[in-house]
Length: 115
Image: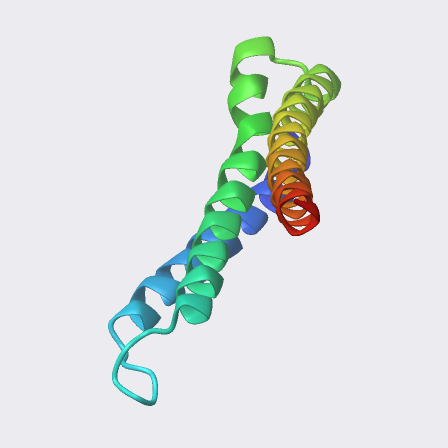
């Protein structure tokens, strides 16, 4: 595949960032313990790094299967698009559930105040 060096470079950067984040996990922030916000940021960095690394390797794996550079990029892009669509749908569903809880709580509060 002609652009495999670029994809391997992107995957390498993702692996390096994830590895660096693993090193930072053993460091203690000021105050001695990780706050919930710092834990979320740390997990986000690791998760995003692994996603970038694996998504950069997908076209190379598909190329080994199809032996056509253009088709492997198309199939890989379609697969990643489906994956991203699934994640966005899950986040949208979670947001709708959270909003529904807020609406029910507000309605309960108003109903209790009126009686």
